[in-house]
Length: 458
Image (cartoon, rainbow, N blue to C red; front, side, top):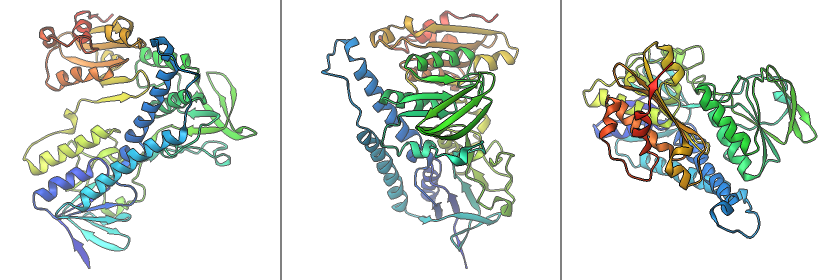
């Protein structure tokens, strides 16, 4: 017997539960299937726990700098890693439990715990039980990529998932991967007191960012005592009396880096390899991401893919927006498109990086006439007052249309990026800011000044 539903949601990440809420509110009978933890990456191994750890690391840094502010501590501040980990663990548990209880108490929603596999375009099995529905939504997320690297099978390693469970301080943490996830962990553990080395295959850190952003981030990290090795084209591992050794060879030179622990932060892969997608005729790309159209529909009519598994965004906010697009189109009669989304994201080092739209390099590649504005955070009053003057603000504008193409704020108060993001979403010219009266003292108040100081790109 096949158990029929009006809709099936596979995965209880950021997009699945709110969509189940909208569907059940419209009168549909919905099955939500989750094989592991409710809440997905964000709640369990991503945003919530890591930003809790970042907050602890920031507190440690401010305690270390207390004398700069006239605050005298008796002795150096200590770090209780078990308490640090317990804070993150509570955030995980409370968030996960909240989502689980919400779904279980949702009228019209049936929660099933198990591994869903497609057996046809609109049929799945969950641990032997057959289900069917005219609408199916895949929201299975992703996990850390662990490529086949020489010697990796001879050593123990950590990923972002196991790092958030760590309740001890590594003597020497070697982070393989110099991008967003790796750099956040690198800085936080350096602030907790570990020796930290970062190994990056590319020629610079966070390679998708502009060169000036990458260079500034490297300077910030190295100033805190983090060793950075870039151009590591060949990376291998071996055992060592300290625990392990990471061997590096490439354009950045050769090195043998002994460490107590290694974190692999070299990319993500979608959780799509064991869903039976081929049995349903659901197409994926060469990396395993489910291909979707502008409305997030897969190659099978009325089957949709949301969140990290579709390769169209790797963030909680993009996954949630996937839900908003699907719900608006299916339930509200709208025609929202994925292509209309303006990309925005952040790197939560300290200071953080807020990014929206195109980078300067991407904007230059379009061949448009550009206006570019840049201002160091050392010339931002709010940053001076907080003694957090590292970084800069940058904006790129189309000189003909006066529309903002992209911006970066690497510095304290990085949430000021949302003023630019909102203007871009509203399709407003940069001159809109000329009539704004921002609050003083803030970082946001310098955005009009930043824009007024733009110059034509050379």
